[in-house]
Image (cartoon, rainbow, N blue to C red):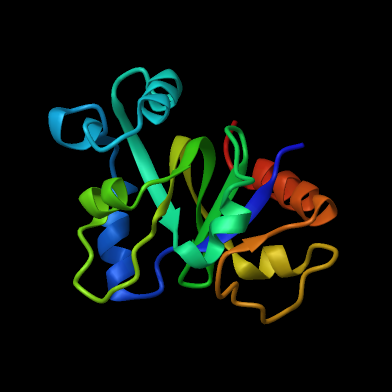
Length: 169
């Protein structure tokens, strides 16, 4: 079953900086610098999901290790901010690699490091207002989706239907 999760991604200056680095455009992962940081299995899986050697990436902190271990290719993430679902992505490969994450986002010392990294084999700008999500069964009006959240099967299916209605085919 496809998991659907919601991840804030634009609420702070640091998040917006990271968005510009790895979501605005695909970045290379198989060059001498970054490729050397990847385990052979991760490099193989990334290359299979992204044959051109470039991908969009996002991540989560070590606080989410347990849940992020369940993320698989094909899972769907809603990237949120500014009271919108800003984009919808389909996971290409998920893995834990602090060195690779640091190479992507170069966080300032003492800033959170997103050690759980995932690539996006599709990335679609969305602009879906939170109100449209709140109107779905099981969601709460006024919920600003603060923090990574994995949706149950019912909410996930409702969100996927909503996304299908809002994005061009």
